[in-house]
Length: 228
Length: 412
Image (cartoon, rainbow over all chains, first blue to last red; front, side):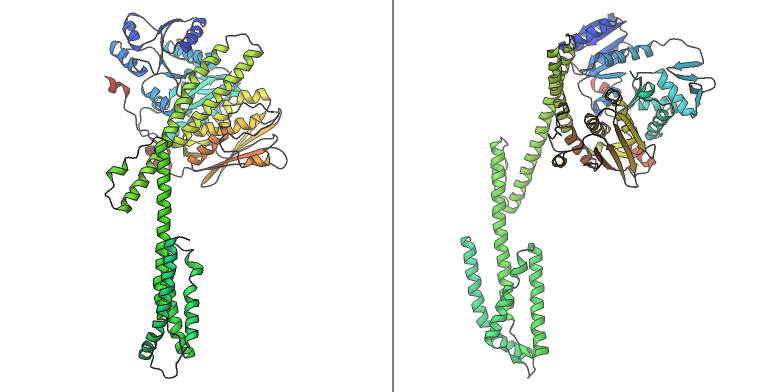
């Protein structure tokens, strides 16, 4: 697996490269947006990590340049120095898959990278019974259970839960969830997603005691992770 | 006493004496014209003088306490009252006390006095404004109004000057916050990178100590950054959020810390969702700061209780711990900048800005936050926030985010 890292902050980039290489990835490091845009068509990358602010252009601008040259972009993570709501909204609106607030720890960075790579390269699985930790999902009977005990989920809750489980560790924007679970109906209430997610947390016990962590990211999106 | 005031008082006394003499004569004629009643007798001159002086001095008791408009009104009412009294005395007691002197004195003296008072106040305010401007000029704020507005009406110029000074003060506050945000933000990155690099070294007492120092600096920078952001946050950008989910997430985040310290957390909420209008990031950090504070002062094996309750208008979020409580003299200062409940047994790595941040954030959300000791043992922090009372279908349109213009279109 090959990762492109675009960051002009050498101290932090050095650490990130070391982490990624230790985890078995091959890393190409670029210090300027232009260098990367020139090199990109000749290389294949499985994932890109961009710093938001670069000396010659901003991270999202690099993305646009890439889109002009290629149809499909690999999963993209933005490194951002800010962790405010407006910054996260910008990241999601720019079309990135996830973000990491600098300076992130090794565990968080690798978790984000691995989650996106898992989603980009799904393992074919035709088994109707799926297991996520101690939770079992029967997609045929549309039943969720834990330790032989069935949960009473509504249709939407089941869809939402399954989608969360299949995208473990991935940042799922609220509008994306609305589209996937409720269809592209623009009139749907935004509170509805929050209420459904809060029901799921209670019903499926998605708490650190039970090995899960379900996080709302400024209510712009949600992320389901396994709790360490 | 100023020279002007003395002149005024002298004039008043002179007027007073002249009017008194003239009015006694004058009133006799008026009286005979108005009241054609043979049985009414004139009050002796000494009595008329005495009553006039007493009644002229009487408004002194309340006049200085009232605003200009009310003092003018009170004088009018007073004069009407005096005239009514004089006629009442003539009618019931058959005694005529000539009121003209008294009326003229009251009519002239008090408005004059009021005018001098206003004049003095204006001079004082002008002086204060000038001092403030000099102060601002010393701090490097330019004074562009002097030249451009010198020919204006002085009252107008004064108002303009005040508005400009207020604008300068606002600009200064904003630039101070911007600088603080800039510094705290940019100082965080190298500190964070340094902490990550430190992990590469073997653990020894120096590396541990160094890590503590770096962490403290990082916490401090973070504290300043967050407090400035809370101060600058825009109430118009708040949106509807569920405080129960938010609090659950705070608890989830603290799970490891709770487990490490062996503290049990009990959360109690009557309803599944309680909606308020706010900034998710700020409220999350505010609740988190209070919980972390409780964890920091809780002994191992103790219980922290979080209770969320609400009535029709407000939500109450309580965090109750079984720690040593807060020293009584510290409670008042708890939500002020750089306050920290010092305790020898606790580690002192707080920035002193955690609860200050809570105070600002909750005020921005039109709520209150308070702390108190519990009789048995421990402390209780209570946040109250007004509920979002709009019907949910209204909230949707309101809550729908205006999409910022796409970065792509900007650049293509």
